[in-house]
Length: 205
Image (cartoon, rainbow, N blue to C red; front, side, top):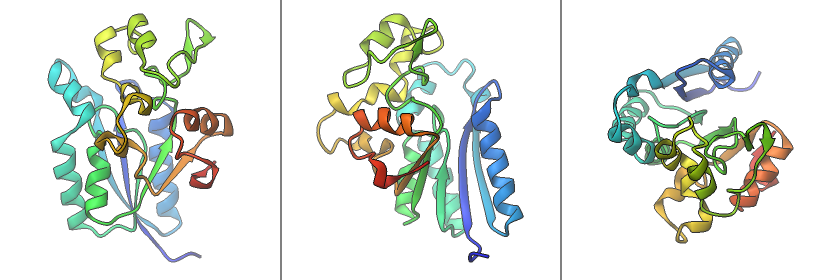
């Protein structure tokens, strides 16, 4: 059996339970069953009801998550931080907190949100890749996220690398992760079209 590890498992729960929520919960239990220690850090989207602009701001940077994750890592030494969903309450601030503690980061890409505000590459039941490689203006026009133009404009995909200056701080959204896990090859291929660093050597499927 491998040497037991301490894993910080991080996830932002959705308002309506889905597959990512189940993966987060099941993986933590599986790790514990194999002798590892799991420290859970969670947020829940029910907290953003009526939050308006404040909630939109937290999607870009959450001081609350940075402080709480930093405290959690100071209280419990961890070997790795595994991030699932960080949108919208955890934000890229979570990666900074782990980096500040010198803890390697693994990000599982459960969906296509890096390149698609809706996270699905679908619109009206058909494949849509109009936002890949460009500012996601088509998604904003169509209100692809929650049928809302303002909400779509605040999704992580708006920080697309094709419109960001080199070395922009928001690149830490995923580019400073030690390793990324993708669910299938297609997802890795499509995301790496936009995020050039996300090549096969950096991914586990």
